[in-house]
Image (cartoon, rainbow over all chains, first blue to last red; front, side, top):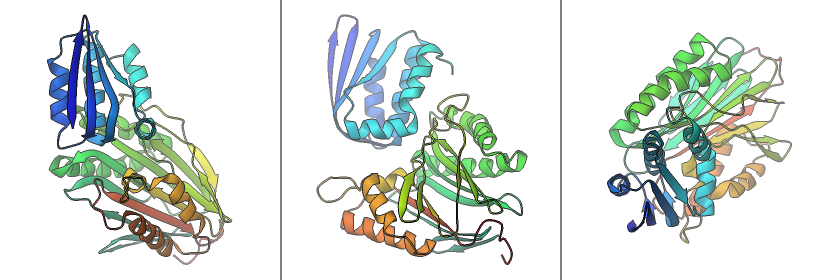
Length: 103
Length: 241
């Protein structure tokens, strides 16, 4: 997995390429956690595979962000990964957390 | 109910059903599981799930969820209540570790032929009836992701003699072939459609053989769990188990 970070005023973006799984999930988690910006985007356009550990980490980080009054956006999700995330209920969880961060 | 545990999996005989299931691990110990759980004289639960992650922690959490599912069924066997309670009890344990579990719970009433399905972030079941394959429409958020279970509620089907139900984990449809393409739900539906008339064990073996043909022996990233149930008698005809 490769991660490229871009930071602008008040916003940061992490472009993720390759495979995000059990073996490297902490790497992306650390990158998300070290960013101080109000809004952080995780761009998954180059992602080929994500396992449940990757999904769990992204939702845990989104929960932490919402509790802090910040926003973690997961953007440009490849269609096959989008389908997997929909089955788990990923987007419904993000919707709920946006309004009720402690849900 | 007779549940036979074999080297390669489990076989269920009872309630006018025959069931056959197995888990194929991919490398490190994973969090896939399935269970046949007797409820009362007339009905049986079939549960399939996948706990996040790999290794010791996933295996331990899987065992917790498996035990809690049995406990929740014992307390109140209404399928939607089972999942709601499981999300409360098991979800709390999972959330503490930043984890979650997908789960699909079926309850089959052998007297009426009614199959009730509740989904928590899992692939819905496939139903084979008269050579046609239907995909369950029930959806729900995986166990542990929200404090209160959120989903479409219980979906019901009425099964007739010869109908079959297929449950599987994501490792099956996400299995990759040599060109990185996925096995996918469409191929699974096609192979299930061809199983009209086969018994549950034979259906399971044929699906796994097709998966093997597709993947050409390439090692996979995720466990594959597959459970097939087939109605062997008409609803109401329950004698002889």
